[in-house]
Length: 156
Image (cartoon, rainbow, N blue to C red; front, side):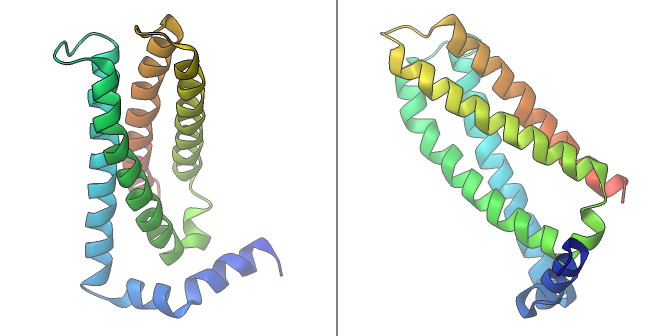
Protein backbone atom coordinates (compact mmCIF):
# COMPACT_ATOMS: atom_id res chain seq x y z
CA UNK A 1 0.00 0.00 0.00
CA UNK A 2 1.39 3.42 -0.96
CA UNK A 3 1.49 6.50 1.26
CA UNK A 4 -1.43 8.15 -0.61
CA UNK A 5 -3.44 4.94 -0.20
CA UNK A 6 -2.72 4.95 3.55
CA UNK A 7 -3.84 8.55 3.86
CA UNK A 8 -7.08 7.83 1.99
CA UNK A 9 -7.64 4.75 4.17
CA UNK A 10 -7.14 6.93 7.25
CA UNK A 11 -9.77 9.37 5.94
CA UNK A 12 -12.23 6.47 5.43
CA UNK A 13 -11.99 5.12 8.98
CA UNK A 14 -15.40 5.15 10.65
CA UNK A 15 -14.59 7.60 13.47
CA UNK A 16 -12.82 9.94 11.04
CA UNK A 17 -15.76 9.87 8.60
CA UNK A 18 -18.11 10.59 11.51
CA UNK A 19 -15.96 13.51 12.61
CA UNK A 20 -15.90 14.89 9.06
CA UNK A 21 -19.67 14.64 8.59
CA UNK A 22 -20.77 15.77 12.04
CA UNK A 23 -22.01 19.29 12.46
CA UNK A 24 -21.16 19.06 16.16
CA UNK A 25 -18.12 16.80 16.61
CA UNK A 26 -15.74 18.61 14.27
CA UNK A 27 -16.23 22.05 15.92
CA UNK A 28 -15.86 20.45 19.36
CA UNK A 29 -12.59 18.72 18.39
CA UNK A 30 -11.37 21.95 16.79
CA UNK A 31 -12.19 23.93 19.95
CA UNK A 32 -10.43 21.30 22.10
CA UNK A 33 -7.39 21.64 19.83
CA UNK A 34 -7.35 25.39 20.45
CA UNK A 35 -7.77 24.79 24.19
CA UNK A 36 -4.83 22.37 24.16
CA UNK A 37 -2.70 24.93 22.33
CA UNK A 38 -3.72 27.65 24.78
CA UNK A 39 -2.79 25.49 27.78
CA UNK A 40 0.49 24.40 26.18
CA UNK A 41 1.72 27.73 24.87
CA UNK A 42 0.28 29.73 27.76
CA UNK A 43 1.98 27.65 30.43
CA UNK A 44 5.25 27.53 28.51
CA UNK A 45 5.21 31.27 27.83
CA UNK A 46 4.65 32.10 31.51
CA UNK A 47 7.58 29.89 32.49
CA UNK A 48 9.85 31.11 29.69
CA UNK A 49 9.12 34.75 30.50
CA UNK A 50 9.88 34.03 34.18
CA UNK A 51 13.16 32.37 33.27
CA UNK A 52 14.08 35.31 31.03
CA UNK A 53 13.33 37.77 33.86
CA UNK A 54 10.39 39.47 32.15
CA UNK A 55 8.05 38.15 34.85
CA UNK A 56 9.72 38.74 38.19
CA UNK A 57 7.31 37.24 40.71
CA UNK A 58 8.13 33.88 42.26
CA UNK A 59 11.13 31.68 41.69
CA UNK A 60 11.79 29.81 38.47
CA UNK A 61 11.77 26.33 40.08
CA UNK A 62 8.25 26.86 41.43
CA UNK A 63 7.17 28.22 38.04
CA UNK A 64 8.55 25.09 36.39
CA UNK A 65 6.81 22.74 38.83
CA UNK A 66 3.46 24.50 38.44
CA UNK A 67 3.54 25.13 34.67
CA UNK A 68 5.10 21.90 33.36
CA UNK A 69 2.06 19.69 34.12
CA UNK A 70 -0.30 22.21 32.50
CA UNK A 71 1.92 22.41 29.43
CA UNK A 72 2.17 18.60 29.24
CA UNK A 73 -1.61 18.23 29.47
CA UNK A 74 -2.05 20.88 26.79
CA UNK A 75 0.46 19.10 24.57
CA UNK A 76 -1.36 15.77 24.89
CA UNK A 77 -4.73 17.40 24.15
CA UNK A 78 -3.32 19.36 21.18
CA UNK A 79 -1.60 16.28 19.73
CA UNK A 80 -4.66 14.01 19.99
CA UNK A 81 -7.07 16.57 18.59
CA UNK A 82 -4.56 17.71 15.97
CA UNK A 83 -4.17 14.17 14.68
CA UNK A 84 -7.96 13.81 14.51
CA UNK A 85 -8.27 17.08 12.57
CA UNK A 86 -5.46 15.99 10.24
CA UNK A 87 -7.12 12.63 9.60
CA UNK A 88 -10.28 14.29 8.27
CA UNK A 89 -8.39 15.53 5.18
CA UNK A 90 -5.03 13.80 5.48
CA UNK A 91 -4.50 13.40 1.72
CA UNK A 92 -5.02 17.15 1.23
CA UNK A 93 -3.22 18.43 4.33
CA UNK A 94 -0.09 16.38 3.66
CA UNK A 95 0.42 18.46 0.52
CA UNK A 96 0.19 21.74 2.43
CA UNK A 97 3.62 23.30 3.10
CA UNK A 98 2.28 25.12 6.15
CA UNK A 99 1.55 21.76 7.81
CA UNK A 100 5.16 20.68 7.34
CA UNK A 101 6.40 24.00 8.70
CA UNK A 102 4.14 23.57 11.75
CA UNK A 103 5.28 20.01 12.35
CA UNK A 104 8.94 21.04 11.93
CA UNK A 105 8.52 23.86 14.45
CA UNK A 106 6.83 21.51 16.92
CA UNK A 107 9.70 19.06 16.53
CA UNK A 108 12.22 21.85 17.14
CA UNK A 109 10.24 22.99 20.19
CA UNK A 110 10.18 19.45 21.62
CA UNK A 111 13.91 19.00 21.00
CA UNK A 112 14.44 22.34 22.72
CA UNK A 113 12.50 21.07 25.76
CA UNK A 114 14.77 18.02 25.85
CA UNK A 115 17.83 20.29 25.70
CA UNK A 116 16.40 22.45 28.49
CA UNK A 117 15.87 19.45 30.79
CA UNK A 118 19.37 18.24 30.04
CA UNK A 119 20.73 21.63 31.08
CA UNK A 120 18.41 21.66 34.10
CA UNK A 121 20.07 18.53 35.51
CA UNK A 122 23.37 20.42 35.62
CA UNK A 123 21.95 23.67 37.03
CA UNK A 124 22.51 24.68 40.61
CA UNK A 125 20.11 27.29 41.96
CA UNK A 126 20.17 29.89 39.20
CA UNK A 127 19.18 29.34 35.59
CA UNK A 128 22.15 29.07 33.28
CA UNK A 129 22.63 31.12 30.09
CA UNK A 130 21.90 27.94 28.14
CA UNK A 131 18.58 27.52 29.95
CA UNK A 132 17.72 31.13 29.15
CA UNK A 133 18.60 30.54 25.50
CA UNK A 134 16.25 27.54 25.52
CA UNK A 135 13.51 29.74 26.98
CA UNK A 136 13.93 32.29 24.20
CA UNK A 137 13.97 29.58 21.52
CA UNK A 138 10.92 28.00 23.14
CA UNK A 139 8.93 31.22 22.78
CA UNK A 140 10.00 31.56 19.15
CA UNK A 141 9.27 27.95 18.19
CA UNK A 142 5.87 27.65 19.93
CA UNK A 143 4.56 31.02 18.76
CA UNK A 144 5.77 30.33 15.22
CA UNK A 145 4.03 26.93 15.32
CA UNK A 146 0.77 28.66 16.24
CA UNK A 147 1.19 31.03 13.29
CA UNK A 148 2.01 28.13 10.97
CA UNK A 149 -1.09 26.31 12.21
CA UNK A 150 -3.26 29.26 11.24
CA UNK A 151 -1.43 29.47 7.90
CA UNK A 152 -2.65 25.93 7.08
CA UNK A 153 -6.22 27.17 6.74
CA UNK A 154 -5.18 29.90 4.31
CA UNK A 155 -2.91 27.83 2.04
CA UNK A 156 -5.36 24.98 1.52
